Length: 430
Image (cartoon, rainbow, N blue to C red; front, top):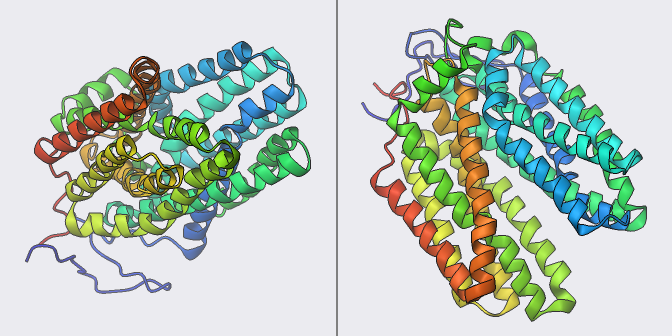
């Protein structure tokens, strides 16, 4: 009967989690409560650390009397390193003997970067900090997904990724508020000391995850290590899959439409209500994070029941509607209200990207390399989006810019609807 999970051993672990069977008849993993909670808090505190490297960098360097040219240069170099490092970062995690150790080293690099940025705001140190932060992020993202897959297995990865996205969103929202308060009441420099300190609880949480419960082969998407260190072979095997190629194009279209949408909306809010711009833009950033926190577990659950494609259609559709409404709305309060749709798209993409990649990379041993490929697609789409939309806005107006983004979002929606295959394996049907 379709859609019914098999429970061949019919048992439950000590935390009440049903023990299901995998396709080969072996029981699905049942990680301990300590490991599951450790992963929850690791994701939460990593989000805290990474939040410090967002818009706070520009604020801090401006306060340090940096020119906008120098600020733009270090930010651009960091972005380029982040883009170029996506595929190597995934390959490093695939080749690592211990995914947990790779994650720990990446988190420590983030902490060192934040501390150096706060302590020595001179050009060469700040540039090195941004490069180290970008490189560490390229490893850390795949590592967290790999730990999740290695810990819970394919049967439970959808729900686990939903939980990850929920904790990450809450961490980002609370960190943004806390760091903003630190910058206001203490100093802009304090933001990065706070980010560096958050590395300590992140590492404590990481090492609550028992290494014996992380199946290293499963974390890489295979039971064999034979080709795992061969980058060229791995890329070839992944790109030979039409599902991955189609998904990469869909992601590029999503980012082309999405990346510049909030910055342009924020500019419109500032022009139309300068006195309330700060609070309105902050609301537009923070509130969608909590929508993501609420929706992500539901997305992860429904992905196992409905499949991946219906939820991707939902996420891309929400983006298309958001772009169209931005082109029509003038009132700044309504602009902020429209931005709340971003929470729907973000919740879907946060769960569905790694989950779809776990599907298409199964049995290749290159789950994390696949994450690097899609991470590269995200970076390309986002980089082109800001430049393209900025040009259109300057020369043809904001209406034309939003209409262009809405058109691109609709193209992505149509591609997901017509071309993206369902990738959910049939492991849980009988």
